[in-house]
Length: 187
Image (cartoon, rainbow, N blue to C red; front, side, top):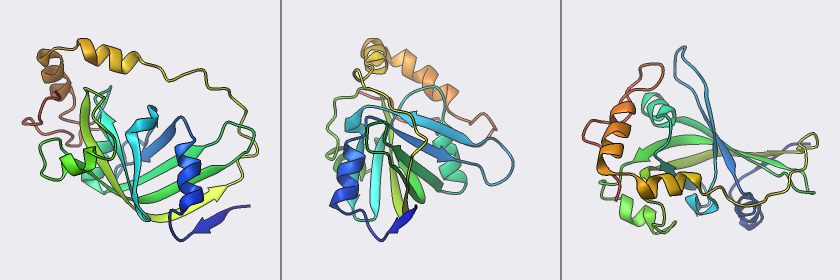
C-alpha cells in the first residue's frame, strides 16, 4: 500500500499544493516531548527543488520545532488528504531554521511572498525519504476557509508583543535552546 519516491515530482507537488494544511513532527535527541504541530495558510509552504522544501514558521505558542532542529535536525512533514481521494504523504529529512536577519532569508521569502507579519523563521528541510500511504481510514472533511485569526492577531501586535514572544521562545518546554535573545522582531 505504501510507495517510496526518489524525488518530489510534479504529481507530488500538486498533491501537497492541494492540501489546506500539513503537520510537522520533531523530537529531542534524549527524553523530552515529541512535538506535532498543524500548519495552515497554504502560502507558507514551498517546494524549492526535488529534494528541498521550506515553510514559514510564524510566531505562535512555542518554539519546539526550532529547538529540536537545533538539537538534532530531524523532522517529518505529513500531508493528509481529507477529500475523496485518500492519501498520506510523508517527507522525512533534516531541517534548519533560517532567521529573518540571515543573508539567505530574502531569497527564501521570495518563494512565499511577505503577506504574513509574524514570521519567526523559515524552516528549510533537506528531504531524505519520500513515502506515501493509503489514508483509507482518514475521514472526509470539507474545508470552509482558512482561519484568519493568527494574521489578525499579529496585525494588531506591537513591538512589545514580539519582545515578549521572543522571551517566551528562548527555551522549549523541555529546556532546550530555542530562539536567541537577539532574534529579530518581525515587520
